[in-house]
Length: 110
Image (tube, rainbow, N blue to C red; front, side, top):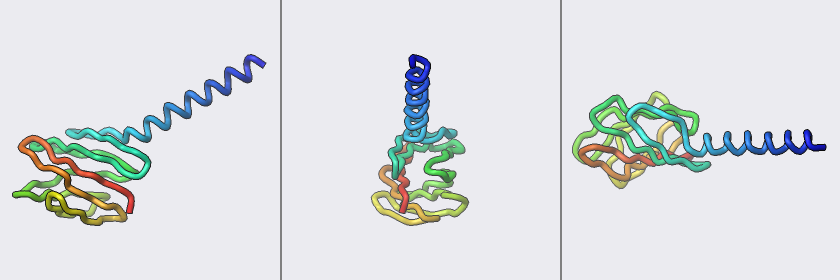
């Protein structure tokens, strides 16, 4: 019985680790992510090739001009002003903040 209990605990720990990995999003270059089941907030670094893979799609910061950011979501470009939302490839994209160093974007399933 001890071996069955150990397998159950091992299986639970593996599932918990996988769940945490999914919630944290996937890594990327020049970016940080904070994800839950439906959305990810991504902080892109400006001045680098910033990209990330979240919610099953690749997202990339293409350009920032004035107070709008151009992003590539699943291969399609979309330009979104700060404080506004747009849709692309079945996702809602909201640019929350643009600073001299970062662009903060929320990507969520539509």
